[in-house]
Image 1 (tube, rainbow, N blue to C red):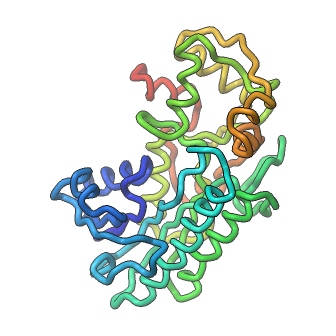
Image 2 (cartoon, one colour):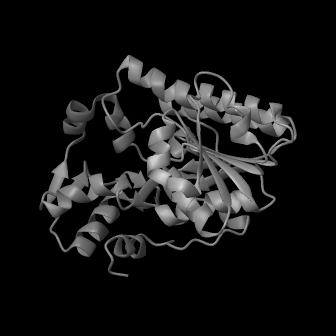
Length: 304
């Protein structure tokens, strides 16, 4: 299979590229800096320069491609959310996906499948409600971004391209994502709960995020799939489990107002409670490698 990975230089994207190469697929990666991509991936990956905001991808990026995985987007967890930052978060996803789909529809032959990233920010802060893939969206900034992002992906489905959207949760992996940031205070003996620890955390191990994207690429499945582990946990349980795995105390309580001072508007994302379960993901036949938090953390620490 020949696969185009958009956003392949990022944390999740690079892991997807590695998994595709390991199983023998031909991989094409796009990015603004072709030389940087070639340095990152070497001769085994075809690298094509493309700025997703400038227009559809060049024809060579899609030539002979069977499927497309789209993971591109401005990081939401780096830097404070200024007006310009929020515009980049939105446009990198919405306009970028719009241009990608336009390129897919213009290709001859067209790719047969699109697997597009989204996020559980679609659901917003819903406290203790169990959120499955059919649950309606919230009305905050990230939810609005996710709705518009997904709407652009569904345009490929409307034109006959099989389309799956993966709403990604809190990704736990080495070298990137949320885990290094979450674990650092514990390693420094400064771990603790956020507020009273009641907020739900819909986490997932990086291996399972990659697995879900490849599952959606390979199987004749379409629609929305939650990219979260089957067993979300409260912040209190996450704190207790991480402290146990790292063998550190976690007596502190981080007040919400302190996070708001440090992170600004992004603090709302950190303190929100999203209890998502991957019902359609599981019913489609995907088997999780790490359904339980403790096993995932032990694997990340090399203790499994």
